[in-house]
Amino acid sequence: MAVNARARLLNTAESLFYANGIHAVGVERILSESGVGRASFYRHFAGKEALVTAVLEGRDERFRAWLAERVAAHGGHPLHVFDALAERFAAQDYRGCVAINTMTEIADPASPAREMAALHKRRVVELVEQLMRNADIPEPASRAREFALLMDGAIVTALREGTPDAAWRARGIAESLLAA
Amino acid sequence: MAVNARARLLNTAESLFYANGIHAVGVERILSESGVGRASFYRHFAGKEALVTAVLEGRDERFRAWLAERVAAHGGHPLHVFDALAERFAAQDYRGCVAINTMTEIADPASPAREMAALHKRRVVELVEQLMRNADIPEPASRAREFALLMDGAIVTALREGTPDAAWRARGIAESLLAA
DNA sequence: GTGAAACGGTACCGATCGGTTCCGTTCTGA
DNA sequence: TCAGAACGGAACCGATCGGTACCGTTTCAC
Image (cartoon, rainbow over all chains, first blue to last red; front, side, top):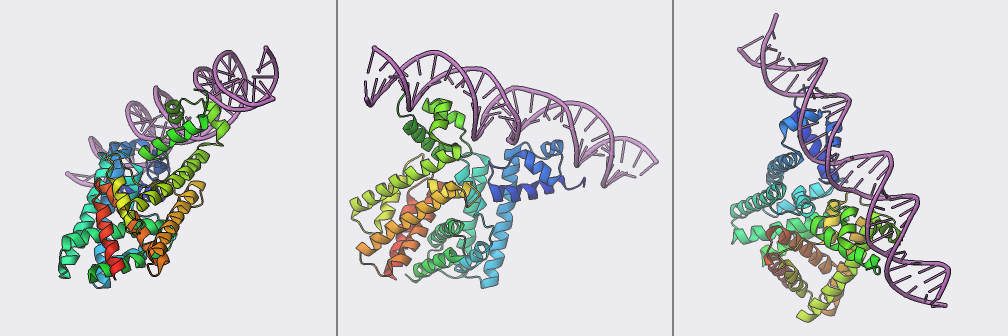
């Protein structure tokens, strides 16, 4: 039980932050649920804010890897990002996108957490843009930003409706966009 | 200074919640900035949660009145919802949609605040659907839900980018949707 | 003019916030 | 094997959380 304290902190914090929000989860709870001692926490992280940004960083990495893998599994076309999203939306404990939630919960745009969230979204747009290029779609940069807007709209809508419908709605809109 | 305590509480709380989020604003701060005594607050509201839902209720009412007015001023076509949004996005202290922020910040979907936020979105969809009917657009219910997804996407994107660009991007997508 | 309602201010409650410090144990690499 | 790093647990810090109770003052309708 005395190893991997940092990894356990990151895993526990990610689950709790995702399920409850950042402000709603205290350091106390992260410590008790991870089984990590208070001192060990402050040995690994400068404070709660550093933990938050580290969680966001890991989340960014794994989400993009997951998205790329699922899109490829569906065929690799940009439209398949919505098929990937639909898989996520189906989860009954779906709580939206961590980056979006961070941007709405944390007011200061200059805070490290907000910067990480913004960086994540920029990287997702880059990923979608590359999918556009691979599919030989004209004006890939503009299309990617439009797809990103549709993805964010679908995520927020899915959080509200609790069903994968928003993914199909967004996919339909995206199809009419590519057909234009 | 001894009148309108309830109205002052609502106004102050709305500003603080919008600028900083719900969890980040304590009752203490609402009292000091509104100049209302602690006891008076609990005479008007059962607690902080009741204040939150009251704020959301007022916000819902005024936002929809504002949206209807601005859309009418732009010509009354459903596409003009994005012209209306663009006006909001231009504000340098723009902090997104209160209903979206509430849904991302408050985890429990059954909480009164979340219910109010969901009700708000449903009412906005109804408003957009009526605009569709007025413009004789086919399948107004589906189109309204698609427009709502685009509006939410634009709001989140505008919060991230800090510019009105997302409104024009969403409008362009909406145009290709109506043309299909 | 008078009584009741509404009000602002303050002291207080237990609980929790993020963070620091110290101690004794457990793990691990040379 | 043994030193030193990494660790878990707990006591403690000032600050703030949401909420209650009591006080003296101001407002307002009759």
